[in-house]
Amino acid sequence: MAPDFDLIVNAGRLFCPETPLDAPGSVAIADGRIVASGPNVTGTAKQTLDFPDSVLLPGLIDMHTHPAPSGWKYGIDPDIEILPRGTTTILSQGDAGAADWPLYRDTVIRPSKTRVRLAISASVKGETGKLGEPSFENLDDLDADATVAAINDAGDDIWGISINISRAASGNADPRAVFARTLEMAERTEKPLLFGARWEPHDWAISEQLDALRPGDVATYCFHVSPNGITEDGKVIDAAWRARERGVRFDIGHGMQSFDFVVAEIAISDGFLPDTISTDQYVRHVGSEPQHDLLRTLSKLLASGMREADAFARVTARPADILGLKGEIGTLAPGSGADICVARWNDNALPLVDVTGNSRPGGCYEPVLTVRAGQLVGQVVGQT
Image (tube, rainbow, N blue to C red; front, side):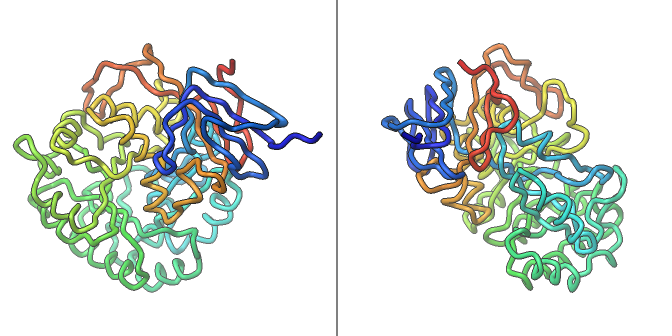
């Protein structure tokens, strides 16, 4: 008789915040979809894999990355640098703008095995320049008509609009003018913003920036350390709480400058959890040791005091909902897309270090297996 499924993956622990599942079990896959999941999956498969010492999650979702063609400012190949490490869906933070949107669609979004969505840059040039060049300094590049046309052309490929008003990104431009032009684009298209704040308080106070954001907008770099961050005097500032109550979301955006253990620990102890955990993974992370990825970033949030169930939800169900893909990704429910991540806890992993050099004890989750649309990605690591 023909097997019932294409693939069965058994694990010592299944975790799905949507179903909910948190127990030993299996996931059965056929024709690129999850057919069955849970502790009582029965049937035969063309291939069966067993991971008794690992946790099986929905394919991870990273809300802040930089997939782009080689030679672009931040760009990495997502199928090489991201997908094999358990992350199956990513959002680009402004790598393409209106002028290069068709090229980006045809060279990154369409051919990638990784599911790629774009927060289109408010600058028509996107991030095609050199490292160190401010992308939003020339206000003439913030062409609302061109960006609106690109969004209308893109359909679901463009999720929202990316804007970064930091000194590094906006140079000598007035950050309020940069924000105002971008907000016009967002309101004309009814798209959310992926917002990077100004870190210099003398230019624009963080409280005023957060008050300007709308329900559904996402503030990234939320745990960076600076005089203009979301914590002050050992607690989360009132403006951050107001923004959250209004429906603004908060994202990690770790990167090279934007995650500090002390800030994270203050926020988490105050009950202010991030809505999503993300890497801001870009070209400078290629070949890093240890490798910067979403599981390591998640492990830093665990070391900062987040409960494991909360952290897992913020790389699966929460970002799926924000991206408008709830039910298709971020879940192990039957009928959803067969994207899964198997990860194993390593007590002896290299230390967890933030961007300022602070380290925390504890282990780290590491990738074992990725399945994207029912297909194994790369080699199975440590199969038993």
